[in-house]
Length: 70
Image 1 (cartoon, rainbow, N blue to C red):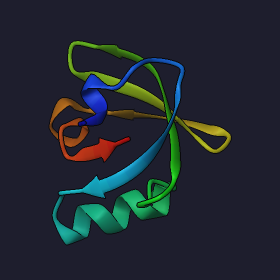
Image 2 (image 1 turned 60 degrees about the vertical axis):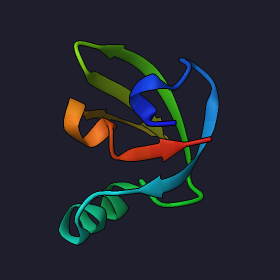
Image 3 (image 1 turned 90 degrees about the vertical axis):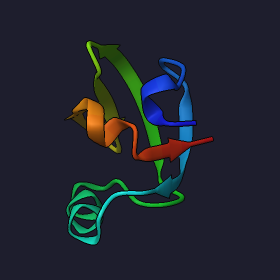
């Protein structure tokens, strides 16, 4: 499921990223990688705030639809 629909405060595994290569590379630099752990902290108006390792990242609606978790 896309991360925008994921449950809150549950550890999830990133299974697929359908963004362009340039965007994928940027996400990798931020710590968002396939098989990586991510936790959705909140979602409002399409913006998703996630916890990656020890940091927090805000993702916009378009990008949130391209990151799939299980």
